[in-house]
Length: 217
Image (tube, rainbow, N blue to C red; front, top):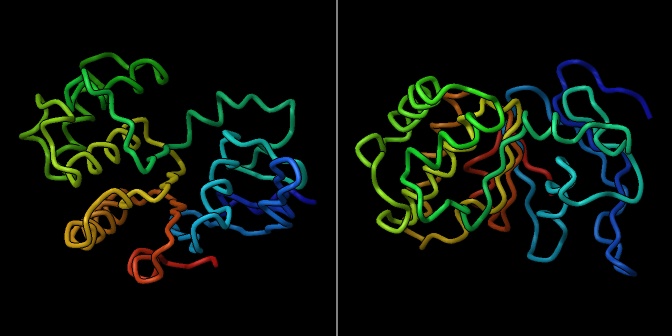
């Protein structure tokens, strides 16, 4: 297996993942180029979330290689903390800190991981909140927001550390149908404005077609 071309941000090369006797990922190969939004679509339990969790090695693999921005993350010698600094992750449950305000949730990672000053982190956070239409909610707690608003805060938090890659694991799964459809378009517009490379997981084929430059089944 070879190091991918420079315009490829993520390269899965014959990747295998087992949970005991269950072969969850069986020889997957897929390249994602810079600026693409690629949606991995399939039924529940097909290994979609596991696949994207291998990108930053939240799930280690048993075979193959995964290259992220020219680094093989499956190599035991790789410094995963450095890789994870460049990868944003939005979970289905959002995972916002309930005791912190919207603004505090967003500035935490840039200050801790990127060593930004509070002033610099707050300036970037407010730019992102403006972009997702939530600047007026900067002092609110997550519990005071709707599901769609929490999703946008989680997105802004992931973008705050300026990742080269964004992973979205069923990010709209917790929303009702009407809000989900509305938020699809908001999310597409935000990703286009930011221009970040993105891998998203969904079981919804219609959502996949709406969101993606390319769909992987």
